[in-house]
Amino acid sequence: MNGVHFVLGSPGAYIHEPGILNRAGEWMGHYGKSVFIVTGSRSWASCGERLASSLERSGIAYTVNRYRGECSYEEVARMQELVEPETELICGVGGGKVLDTAKMLANRLGKPYVAVPTLAATCAAVANLAVMYTEDGVYRDFPVFVRGTTLCLVDTEVIAGAPVRYLGAGIADTLAKWIEAPMAAEGKPHNLPTTGGLMAAKLCYDTLLRDSEQAMEDARRGISSDSLQRVIDANILFSGMVGGLGEDNCRSAAAHAVHNGLTAIPESHHAYHGEKVAYGILVQLVLENRSQTDIEDICGFYKRIGLPTALSELGIDRRLSEDELAEIARLSLSPDGTMGNMPFPVTADMVVEAIKKVESGLMVS
Image (cartoon, rainbow, N blue to C red; front, top):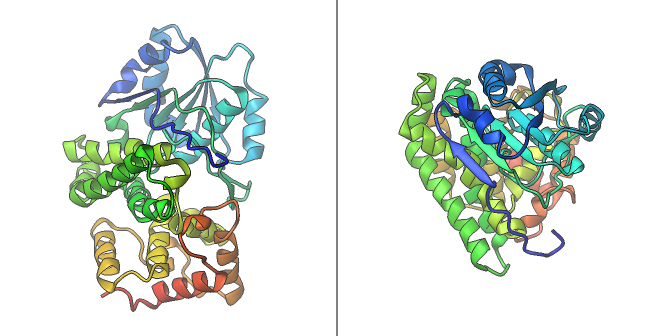
């Protein structure tokens, strides 16, 4: 935000309740009567019938538009051509890339944005930015918006019915907040929004360490438990509030930068965003020269909930060449990324060596 501390801490309204989609039309009707819905096939299959029925009961006109699988500028431009002038709301129904596509579209058009996350895999439903990729799935940049989410409807029943691997990915993406935000905040003024962002990051971290294993077990059984609801709020709401409050003082750092770098390897595209971030956390801990105990504690947590500790667990089941490692490092250090939020200079050689150390297995007891 060009050095201005811009605070957009939370959505205009955040409603988290089992079965809330049965009342989605009632809530959306407060903001508009014509909705352009961006979704994916699996996302719509998980909740579309309930959402559509609720909109119809409330007299809200809607169109359902399937996105093509990547949150890219090209896809947003394609969607933009489909939006009728009388449309009052843009709504994303799905996971992170669907939500970011709809969010980018809404901001381009200057229309209110409604998020209906079907997964608790990222904070995309409330974060005031979109992570943009090429049509081939390689990271490009992350524009930050001055308009936030108008309404976020979180239905625990929908999320509890999703594959549990997505929840694990969201836990890793949220865990990274307490790993990265203090790095981004180091040496910067700790005004109250920054302090609040750091406190939100620590609350996420503590909540996840306490509740993740039970939440994962409950999600496997399709149970909308208290533990699962706390983890969902950490993954979606409070995770998004870290950057929303702290802005550039609490942004991502090396862990997300390494995620960006990993997108240069085609096999990594089958891994979820949070799974690549989980690996990036380990690389960041090595870059920080954190203690063996700290690293082993994180790895132990990963093993308990099924997160990756090696590239092979991200689907990269081969030895990467030096050129490929150099390309990961190059993209990790992109000026459009977040490595610059580390409080010390990071070089390509440092990134490559940190990856090699993670891969050596010597850091895990």
